[in-house]
Image (cartoon, rainbow, N blue to C red; front, top):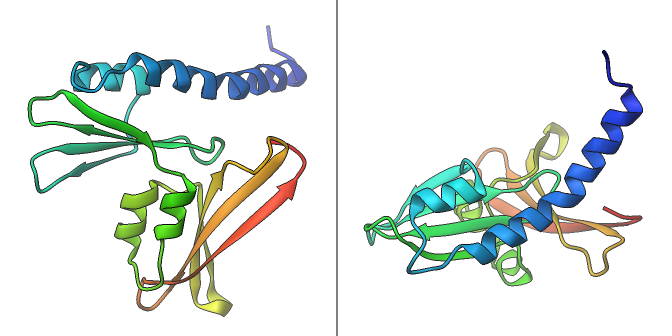
Length: 165
């Protein structure tokens, strides 16, 4: 039996509302110094990226883009034990994106963007992240604008739309 479209839409909306709650529960259950890398993966899912760090640790990126407003970075020690987990789409990190940074530096700081759009007429590639708005009814975005020729940040911008998530 085929499910009506409106039923699928309702289920998708319920799932989208519940995802942040699932992350909140998963994050609370993960304990730095105790939880293993396997537990992190079991609770958070497949990482969107893995970074090897000079100190022998590995950082796992868990982006919730384009629908969510979070990106979690979990640092795993050489002993495969969680050292820390943090939500990186914060005002502090957004403020660190500076003119002259390359794509890898920005990706490492903020995680995978929700979208990447090339504007040939401006000679820019714009990366977009959904971020938390000042109030829950806002849909907020942070943009990093990269020069197409150099691949470096030329500016950042924000867009805030009223009207819910």
